[in-house]
Image (cartoon, rainbow, N blue to C red; front, side, top):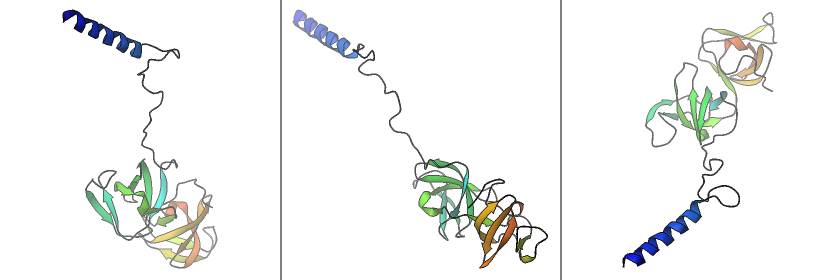
Length: 179
């Protein structure tokens, strides 16, 4: 009995050693793969970037998944938000007041919008501070960004189009071109 079990153990050890030793390619049979096979990727778009809310009610969660609790809720469709991180189909966003949390990508839109964040801002007929003022925009007014070049952006607010200096709104980066 002792001889038979020793032979069996010896045979198993030889088979195991042959399996684990380097093969013709120079790599062990059980070597880890060269690259991770399951990476958690987002959209591949640059971060940070701006987007807007697609719905009047958007739940903001404490983490990237529906199992995370709802921390608070946005209640303003088309509000601009800054995407600061991604995890699979979830985006960590920040609003103009600095509040942040996670939302599902389906609740965001690529349409560009802006909000007047600080003080009353003039909407001009042409991109010059000497141009005719079309309207005065109060803080928290939302609008749509049509295009931006230089220090000015062409916008639309409640059916009225005009130009705003970038510094007077939140929702576009300092030198970001928008066509």
